[in-house]
Length: 419
Image (cartoon, rainbow, N blue to C red):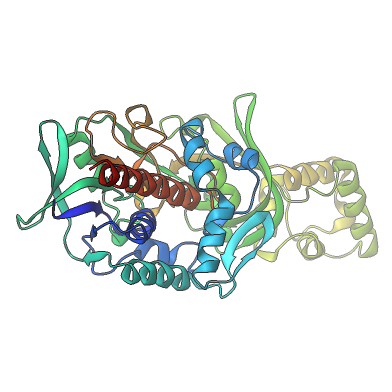
């Protein structure tokens, strides 16, 4: 064979697999349709690269939303600490921030990209850019290579599909891997957006465009059932709401049943309703003749005050000494439970990750090899598994990539020694 391993896709998973396989002495070829590798990785985490989460195994599994048990073996072989150790050994110092999120000390994703590129080149991995894979080559039911755009054929003992999902298509994630997987007979669960901003039916979110909130609690209900409730950060936009809390909540929503969800924002979660009412009473007593909109500036961001007053049915010009007990109660309820309804998810192109993909029932969890076509492997976002925000999705990419590379290397060496 021309190569030991051909990797379709030069993202985080593909390059991590290439670096490890090449380090084991395999002849590796990486094919990618872009003009550079790891484009998406270079912009993840707003260019800072939240590469994993420094959590224990139980916490890691709890933060995987779909098919966590499939990843048990991969996480055992490549845990968050293994990922951290690898990049630090490559010369990239790391730090752990709030929520156990792991970043380069430099806050530069390009350092992670450079580390992987350096390892790939140091161990002789061959890279061909602007060369997307169009078709798998098969013989006797086994994958033996690929055909690239333009008709060029490359043969190998193993082929790893690591082409990503459909999020951020400008970085090369256009769903090509789904077509290749289906060519091999695999079931592909329809891709949907995950970790995605939400459009709201209420139009007043646009009045607060650009407003970022910290230490608020977002609760999502589906009828009487609480689907999500966490404290953190969120952002108002021209179309609705975004930010870490919203992205995490979106993972749990069914895009076909969006009208069933009710979102409530507690703007003052540290205060009970009674404590908030006492706070309002004190503020009102200090300046009884001032307009309500001016007095609320000590409690709420300026751009939010008109929205809260309108929701509570109050006028901003009204003097605080004329506000009734019932009006004050309504104002407090609005602050503690600002309600929105989801009208749509933003397009999948804006999603951080893709939900859905190659059915994990058809993939060996110990090796990432296809159960339907020997010689074909999968890694990363192409698989039907994803997690919350916080470094968990890159951990999936690295762990599945390492598992595939290790399995291919072990098979190659066992055949070498047997021969």
